[in-house]
View 1 (spheres, rainbow, N blue to C red):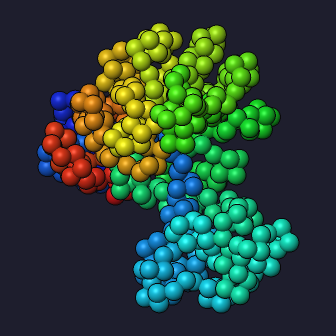
View 2: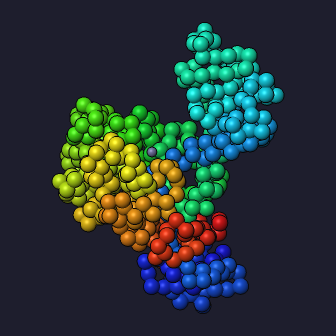
View 3: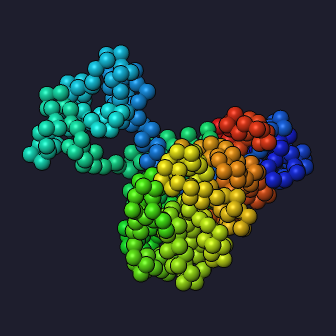
Length: 473
Ligand SMILES: [Zn+2]
């Protein structure tokens, strides 16, 4: 099986043609002699051809599942019921009676056409309607009677906590989630991702891979609470071309939105600097244990105080494993210098810049300008990868923000694409196989609708996606 992309403006090199055999790029440049009657030929018509995007921070399996349970676009109760029936969903989210033809809430009696438990959350998230089968599973004595109405099946506020935990997702559910997200990924030119998983989500990826059905290159990490499970089950950094287990995700602080990211200064209008999750020694032990088991630590640190705590630990680790930091939002010259010196790669989310003019200023005041300084990090020579954290899942949206930085410190489109491909591949130990269009590398290639020099990046669409040597969009 062979594929040829001709007349492309190939990113990063001065060539027009790419020849793919099987799932790898065999030749770039003069490929006429290789094309035969069985070769599929794509004429790129001068458009930009880039390596598939590598999103270095997603919640991929869960994103695909929530896509399925989302009924916020439904225009009638009937339509919601149809969705539930089609996929046998226990939980749906986002219904809004103001959009319904019926102009009323969904009620217990509506959902009672199903003989399995159903919970339908209203768009506000503060109210849900349950059918009889779901209500039967509840211990009403545990609930606050002020916040439920059995006849209508309505449950509100504090009574909602714990209700959806009664319906844990199965491996099959997560398989559907991964498949849904994979379709979305192709439409956005994403061919590789990082996902933070539970053991059950891990099994879902594994089952897809074993059946030859995994359609994305997945690089998986498990939260620190699973470290003993990981060590005991012997999961190592070895994997296939599509599925890799890489290591342990460690949270060291919270978020700026929730004012829980650990800063060296107070949040505006408060006496609070946010919170570190670990004592120094605890964090050191955890990173050490990860390192000794030859696993990669993926360390969430947003505030400067958290970042410095992580750097203090990494300073004492031998440097054999490529431990990386996630988000790394608040930095100054001194911190960037330390990151560079220790050569810690950083996974960054340029789409977060969308909060620069409101949320970040409200939380940080003048210091908002310390946030997400990509050009300064790049000039310092820090190794960077880009990801979306699914807010939203879209590399071109993130690239738009990285280029049009609100503080006038944007980076070039070329650099942004390089970080979103090669940069992210490096962070996951895949730079030898992925992240650039080179002979011998895996054939994950995307054709864009417009030239990347285009002023308005948002106008650019993904026209074609090739994954593992096959056209998937
Ligand atoms: Zn995340």
